[in-house]
Image (cartoon, rainbow, N blue to C red; front, side, top):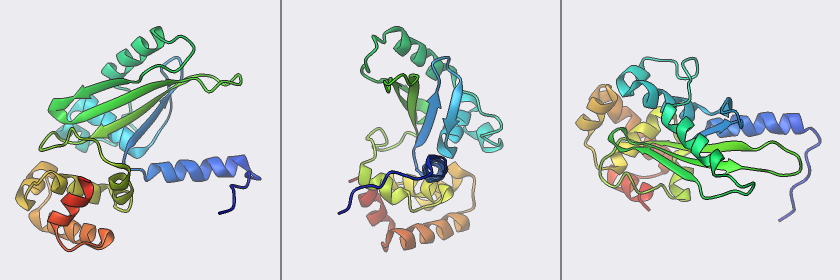
Length: 202
């Protein structure tokens, strides 16, 4: 397999990279040393909205317009920076188990005169079943094939929720959930929810 060719236009590469990261089914948030947001993807904006406002109110907001870094994450970043010794230490993990919100925060120092930053991975999954078990790389890749709404349905199938339960949690009609389930089955190449759960729990 040939090696990677250095990009002729780094700006174009950055634009493509950011567009790809928007589709990743994991929240990604970057903060500067002063705790100011540098960048986040749509999943991170949504998770932060739920953390700040609760699920019901967050659903009615435009997550990016209402974006604010949750106070527990800022506190964890401050603690991480206070303990930093110039080298990357163990990441901080912050969770709100009642709402299925989890954050993994790392203080990253790239070297070469580049400024340090906080790298934050956000995971928003309502707590049920084995939701505290992290997704495998294979499961993340599968979720990347789905739209945001399809991922919400697939994650609840992973936990064993029935169609009516998923509809109630997501405040959608059972018919809408069935339509989205059919799309999930087609995109993942499976014939039933049991197989979806098995793939996402591997």
